[in-house]
Every structure is written in structure tokens, then in C-alpha cells.
Image (cartoon, rainbow, N blue to C red; front, side, top):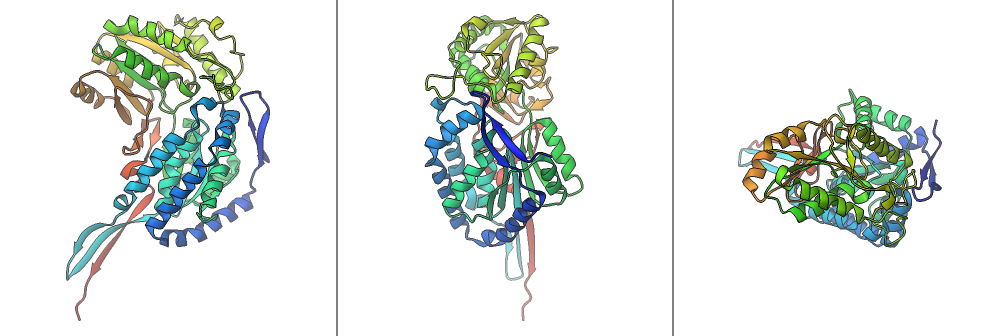
Length: 462
């Protein structure tokens, strides 16, 4: 049994942080405290809950000078990008703004005979199992609306970003959120599974691998616990013949290689209409060559190490298999001598690829992208849908009607036109197929973090 969780830094392979795993008894006690505290929190006026949550995010912002290098040490993102505060603040502001209307009762009838209304009740305890790639953004997606809706929240973060949940809780509690209402736990898989099987939570949000999502579903089987699962992705971009070429290259390549390609909705495969293909490929390779691989603590670095050596190993394996099967690599390893065969991995652009190759089929989650030529929309659509995942698809054209018509046929959760790799908090963040189920943010996010409760009140006159 694991007794200590260790974060191995991708910067130098050292143990950056370690924490003792909570015992089963300690975890049950934390759940009991959360359950006891949640009723009073739900009874707190909505505007006061909103104010405390916003104050918690403000307190987190005040920790930026510590958070940014801490993230670099834990998962390798370069400090030049300043952490995840832009998205955290945008999502918090929007969810706070719509809370009153999103959580308002649905009034059916108010007459001298009946009062009929549907209210939204918090689930009780929301369990957030957060990933390492965007450890603040992905967890805030659920933490903020869950707390605003009146739930207690328990967070368990990935070992690779061991300190993130601890830091978020510290910020929120310092701002006045009751400490039993929002707790961070360090848990092993066995205790996590036991808590889920024991119906400890009213709702569980998990972001991670398909295998991890399947394990959550198995543990929750028969408990009827609500689940939100954001799992794998292999997001496509399709560049049509009328696209703005330079804009498409810049956004799609950034979407493919930012954060060392470790983005839930990162671009992993690109399909280009034949008239633009050669120019797109040339510009894409030039774009990738302009990155600077190196220590993420160096402000000049634009591409840090992957979060773990084993993640880089999988990307190297997919790339090598593709090359052996006939793919062509456009980036010369000599241009990136910092690639150490470990966590530091150079970017790569592949052509002469097809869907028999894992790099065009399986999730890579690293700084590699394959580009294919297509003859028309029908071929592009077939290739985009030839995938077990469905998170986002990025369509590039000057014709909005064409993009919307094509988007209606793409098996995905979000359709982008002329942009990629962005989460709009006003829209539901969701997926289909092996990407999972449920949805976060937007009005629908509040619906998923509450349950409807109906009141049918027949008024009896004296």
C-alpha cells in the first residue's frame, strides 16, 4: 500500500514534494466533517457564497509569485506564461455572474390555489479528482460553481501536481470559506475507490485518462452517484481552401505544441485542403522550429519538459512507429540538442501519415502533430470522425454556414471556427464517445452540480 505520494519534478528528476497518504479512517472523518458543514453552507445566502468564492480566487491570485515557479517544478510549464490565472479569473467571474439566474427556481404557478416550483438542491459533497496538465483551470471549473451552488467540495489532485489542491484550499479558507466545506485530501487509489463505493459523495467530477474514468465508473456502480468524466482527446483541425493561412498555422500549431502538447483540447491531427497543403506544411514546420526547448524556469523557454519521462516515452514511441511505417519528420533533432531522451522532448511535425498509425489515432498528449492532405469536406469529415474521442474540432474557413453545417456532422463536444484550444465559460464543456460524459461550466454546469426538487403546494382555504 502506498503511504507517501511523491512528485518527481520533470526539470531534474528530483523529488520536489511529498505528502503522506490519508488513512481510510482519516478520509472518512474528512467526509463526515464536510457533510456536517455543508448544510450551513447551503443555507448561507447566495450572494455571500459568491463573495467568499471570489475572495478565495483573489487570494489565490495573490500567491502568483509562488504558484508559477511551483507549477514549473511540478509539471514543467515555462514560467514565461504566468500560470493559469487568466482562465481561472475569466471562468470564476462568469460563473459568479450567472449564478443567481442559473440557480433561480423555475416558477410554474403562483396562484390562490397552487404554488408549483422546481428548485435546485446542491448534491451535498462534490468530489473533484483533478489532473496535472492544467491543475488549476480544470479543478476551478468544478470548484467554483460547486461551492457557489451550496455544495461542500473535497479535492484530490494528481500526484504530479501534488501541491495544487493544498494551495487552492489554503487560499479559499484564508478568504473565509469554512475549512470543513472545502478540503484537500491526499489519497491512494484504494481509499479513493472505497470512498466512492461507500456513497461518500453526491457528485464526482473526474478529469483524466479513459482507464481512470472506467475505474471511477466501476467504483460508483450501483451507488447512483452522479458522474462528470472528461477523459481522452485526439482533437482535429480542418483547414479549408478559403482559410486565412497564416492565422490557421499560428493558432493550430500553438494549439498542438503549447504546454508541450499536454492540453485536453490540444490539436493532435490536422487535415488541410489540397490547395493550401504545401504552404501550410512549410509554415507549420517553420513555426515549430521557432520554439525554444529548455528549463521552464528560464524566461526565454517556450517549450518545457513533459510532465513525466513516461509521457515523453509514449510520444517518442508513437513517432518512431509512424516513421517506420513511412511518415516523414520535418523537424531535425539537431535543431533541438536539449532533447535529452527523457522528459525534455523536441517538437515534431509529421507528414505522409495516415490513420493506420497510432500517432493519428491514439491520444499522444505531447509535442507532435500529424498533417494530412484532403480533397474535400467529405474526406475531412470521415477522417475527423475516425476516432474514439470527441472533445473539440477546429474548422478553418471564411464561410460560417459551411462550418456550421459541417460541424453538425462532426462527432465532438465543441465545434470551433477559426480558433482552437479555448474554453468559453458561457458554453458547456463536454465531450462524446470515449472523451466521457457530462458537462462543466455555463448554465448546464450548474444543472449538473445540483439536483431538481419539485414543490407542488395546494393551498387550502379556511
